Amino acid sequence: MSTQASTTVAANEARGRRSAEDVENSKTHFRVCRFIIETGVKLGMRSVPMATACVLYHRFFQSASLQVYEPYLVAMSAIYLAGKVEEQHLRTRDIINVCHRYFHPDSEALELDGKFWELRDSIVQCELLILRQLNFQVSFEHPHRYLLHYLLSVRSLMNRHAWSRTPIAETALAVLKDSYHGSVCVRHNPQHLALTSLYLALQTYGVELPRGEREWWQVVCAEITKAQIETIMSELLQLYDMEAKCT
Image (cartoon, rainbow, N blue to C red):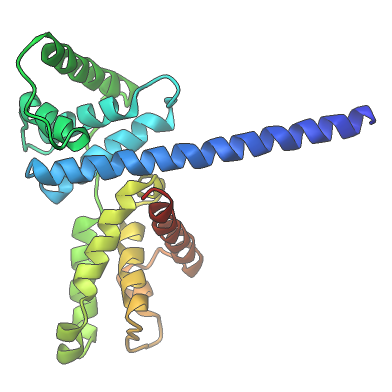
């Protein structure tokens, strides 16, 4: 085999290994963000603090490696930090106990022993690591308020009875919540993510809105293009495919 052919084979093998590693990393991130959301619900977190916790997690691993940092510890610290950022303070003891129950559903709450205090110190230290890694930029603009605005606009375009019998709002909010399972939530601006969540909800139920000189989505969000909508929608649909692989 020639040197050039050998180099080509080696390059293809390296790309294949990277691709397989990327898939496994994506599965890990999906599972960990599912953990954040499920434990967040049990802790009584509101939607925005839970979203902030997921964004903190994703932004941290944009420049950090899963081979270096324990993802579930980062997730616990992200929950703790998100509570501070969004002014819904959570006790570390509650976070530890709920997370412990997540992995050991039949066990009792952890005793206040050396193991507990070691885990608590790890969460606090990891919180400082996240802050440094993100250069203390931990306040984010989320898509939720944009989605609310877009829903009101679309509702005004729909027949009242059609709106009441079709769960457009609930579906769009569910899609938006699901977007935090993957890095799609940090790769696109919040207006575009909100609009695409609504676009996907309308498509799901086959709802067609009245068309004037411009499409409805051009009216509510002038700077987005159809290509951007399709790109984000493809990434959202990939998350549902990922969910099937992670069950």
